[in-house]
Image (cartoon, rainbow, N blue to C red):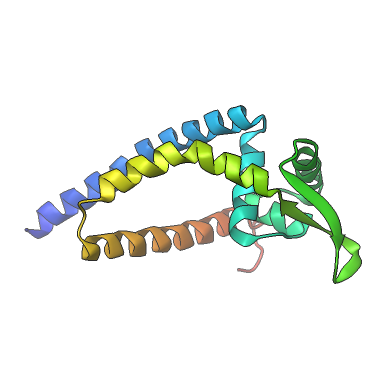
Length: 159
């Protein structure tokens, strides 16, 4: 493959990603509606499923919300039966938001058709390519987080 062909292929891959991202956002919106929550609430449930119980402030930072907005988010999660808000066992002055197992299971059921299709698409992919894809996804996630952090930093604030 020539350098020009490689560049064209890289451009094609980069150009294809936003179309898939838009569809995933739309799919998430459908799942949120089926669960009776907002897309932000669904993102919070994802964060809780990955990071486990955490304070409202930590949860808010993970989903890009201010402290006040995070408090309202937690209230919605509790009212929807998605999570519980309990006293932190290490510091009774603080609270911890914990995902309810039933909510995680219900969300997983809604995502199973998508996950099954992804497994089917990847099923014939050789292990070296799968590893390269995983490396790319993790790297892209980390660099996107850095860009997001920089974009949210007040102008003139140190990095």
